[in-house]
Length: 203
Image 1 (tube, helix red, strand yellow):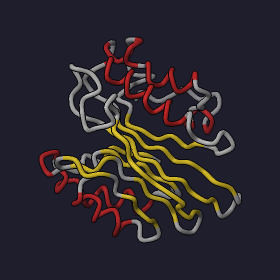
Image 2: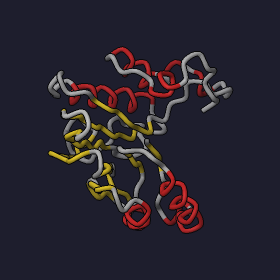
Image 3: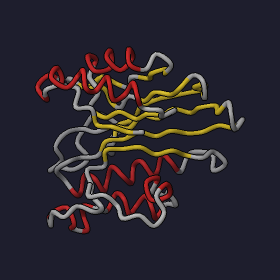
Image 4: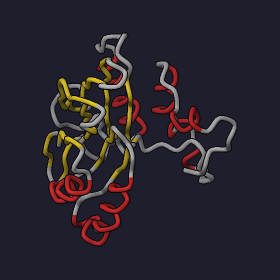
């Protein structure tokens, strides 16, 4: 499961906290990636998911880059970390017209059921710049290339793309690049895999 929780106070977190807690408490996901988590929203989600262990990620301004959690009944965390989506590896914009510095967190897990390692990578791409999203996706793919190919990877993200939106702007090729890049790298769309033959909802 993945969600951009927009946990900042200026994004209306206080008004949404109760509903967000309720939704997350009912969610049955074993692995969760969060974008725009804040210390305040993290505290709420820790209460909602007492069976999950959280890696908060790196603090940046009023958010955490990028929080991940896993269910202790299914996994053990072997390692985790965060890296910045910039050429310097520092919290800098990926392109001159990017909105803000972005980053990716990861957690290497031991699957108690399957008896194998699993890598979870969670990212948040720029919401303004197509050049930024392209550069950030390629940085993520370079990191993925360093992972042992025997380890399955679960990739979650707010990629700021849309595959089935009726809005003309969101149907432009540059708005779908991160999705097509990941497919080209061998990743499969979890929604498509779980709903074979069904029309994709407009997102």
